[in-house]
Image 1: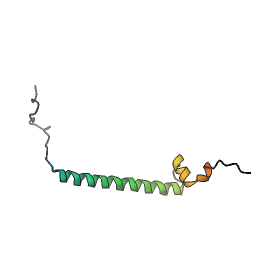
Image 2: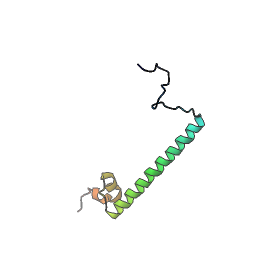
Image 3: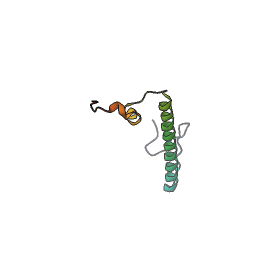
Image 4: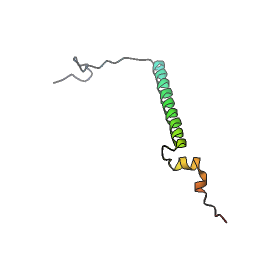
Length: 77
């Protein structure tokens, strides 16, 4: 029927497992986290530029940060 549990099947769907050390994994993880942070920062910077240029609509939080006077509900006498 198939390979028993724990056996590696021979053929085109064989997977290769490579053992890495803890230090190698942590270095890879730091690199991936740095790439992710850079991508998020770039997206946030582009969103700020688009908002400033009026190309996209602001959500409520962004509207409050950029135009807080809209939320001023004090009576004007």
